[in-house]
Length: 398
Ligand code: GDP
Ligand code: MN
Image (tube, rainbow, N blue to C red; front, side, top):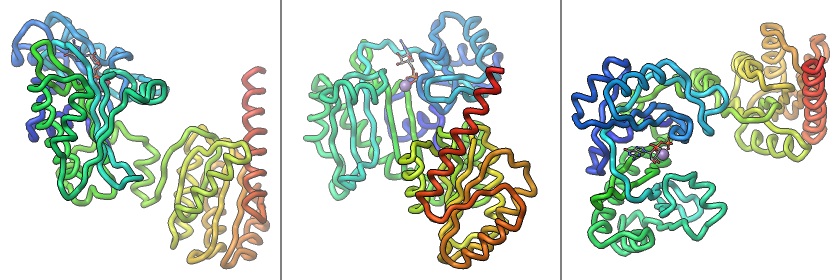
C-alpha cells in the first residue's frame, strides 16, 4: 500500500524530518484560502497522486499569486494526471498540497529500502537528486551511494559521514543528515515500510536540508499491525482489479502483457510466467488462486482476468495437490457460462482428478483448448494470443 505525499510528510514531521509548511485542500476556494494561512507571496501547488514524475507532467506548479493558486487548483482538481509512472489513463486528482516554496541550492536523493541480498535495510543516496534514480543507476552507477544498517546497532555515525561527504555536504549539514537518517530509519521500522524515498532532498540557499518530496510504501503483509495507517488508503489511486482481488482473497498483480494467467500456488504462478516469456509471450497478470481453492473462487478469478481489456488469451495452469482438478473444471465452466468469453482459453490440469477435470472441460462444449504439459500449454497460449492480436490489428486497419 502506498501513501500520498502529504501523508508521508505528516509522518516525517512526527520524526522531526524537516518538510515545507503545507495545507491539503480539495476545492479551489480552499486552495486560495491556504495562501493566507501559509503567508508569503509565492506558493507551490502539488497534485496528490500516487505516481512519480508529477513535476514534468504539470502536477507541480510554482505560482506567484493567490489567483494563480486558485486557477491551478481549478485546472487540476477533478482531472486525471498522466505521468510516466501512472499508466496512460493517469490517476485522479482529488487533493492538492499547497506549500510554501523552498529556495533550492542543490537537489539530492535519499531513500531507504529492504536489501534482500544482505537482509538489511539499505540507505541509497545520490548527489544527482530530482532525476529519475533508475536512470542515474543505469548510466552513472558511481553516483549511487549505499550503506546497510545492522539491525542490532542502527544507523552509525561513520555511515552518516560516508553518505554526507559523498553527497558533498558541509560539517553542519552532515549533522543534520544524521538526525534525518535516524528519523527515517525509525519511521521505516515503526511503519513496516518497504520503501521510504525523498527525491529531492534539497539543500536550501540557506544551507538547510529539507525533504521537498516524500514517498512511503508500506508492506501489505504487515498492515494488520497498523490499523491507523490502513485508514490512509486511497482506493482511487490503486489498480481496480487488484482491489477487487483483495476483496476475494486472491493474490493478483496486474502486469503489462496480454496473456491472462490463472494458477494455483505462487511458485507455480512464477514458473508459468517464466514459461510464457520463454515461449515469446508476455503475462497480463500474476494470479495465485491459492492452494485449497473452491469452484466459486476459480470463477471469481477467471472473471477478474477477463475484465482486463489487455487480455487476448488465458492460460489456466492448475496442479491438483490439495485442490481437485474436477472442482477447478467446474469453476471454469461456471465462469465461462456466466461471463461472455471472447478470448481463447488454454487449460492444463495435472494431479488429483485431472482426467475427470479434463473430461468435464471436453464435454462442456465450451471452446477451451487443453494441453497435457506446461510447455505445450505455454506454446499454445502464446500462439493464440498472437493470433488474437493479429486479428485486432487487422480489424483496426479495415
Ligand atoms: P515529482 O515530480 O512527482 O517527483 O514531484 P516533486 O515533489 O519531486 O517535485 C518536482 C520538482 O518540482 C522538484 O524536483 C523541484 O525541482 C520542483 N519543486 C517542487 N517544490 C519546489 C519548491 O518549493 N521550490 C522550487 N524552486 N522548486 C520546487
Ligand atoms: Mn519527486
